[in-house]
Amino acid sequence: MKQVTSVAQLREAVAGLRGRTALVPTMGNLHEGHLTLVRRAREIADHVVVSIFVNPLQFDREQDLQAYPRTEEQDLDLLRSEGVELTFTPSTEAIYPHSMDVHTRVEVPGLSDIFCGESRPGHFVGVATIVCKLFNMVQPQAAVFGRKDFQQLLIIRRMVEDLAMPIEIAGVDTVREADGLAMSSRNNYLDPQQRKMAPALYHALQQTAEALRQGERHYAELEENATRLIAAAGMTPDYFSIRRASDLGTPAKSETGFVILGAAFLGMARLIDNLEVNL
Ligand code: PAF
Image (cartoon, rainbow, N blue to C red; front, side, top):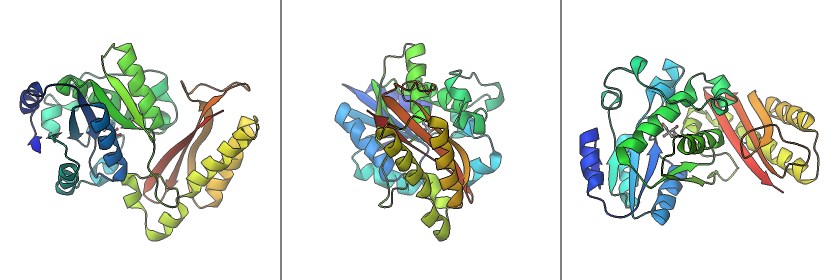
């Protein structure tokens, strides 16, 4: 596996690849969820490039950025065992040579301002900017993202469409622990007692999904019930909302494609999860 750290080395390495390339952008601290993205990338392309970069532009709190787990050697070993041929592990200076404050930004308005975007101002501008940069650097034909970050996936799809980028965006299903908790690097922040409480978010999503399948359409009531369930489990709810899956709009009573989105604070962690319901 070749590891490059500069944009010049990256360009040279990808120029030598023949056929279709898929990019898997990550912030490292890889777990089974990331490896599932890598495996999907392998299915849809001839070459897989994985980037590992903890992007400061998408963190709204310095403390959160500093605390983000960095496990590069372990990550590279995992990628090697998955047969990845090229990894890009740039420094912050390689990505933002003129400082972040004066860097050009990519913004997908509307979709970026709600839910996680409202709780973490500037977060999705940071995500869209780094993903756009990585696309320009690697010039992949495809890129793979997890459906766990459903809002992020929609924003990237919208950016690709709006900016006419010739890139297929593949969304991969959330990988869960045995008790239903969605895999996330942020689960590392949970102590053993919090770890036991954490699946309550998924249970609230499941309960709401079941109610939708049963024909219940009092969305506000369902959201309130779920929020109460999350709070009763000892978490601090951030948001819980039933939306149209295609664009996160408010669903009509006749809607058939839903996404239920939830986020909650637990100790040092802010957990997010979602369930799609197609009727
Ligand atoms: O989902 C993530 O890990 C990040 O937001 C991404 C897409 C790698 C951009 O930094």
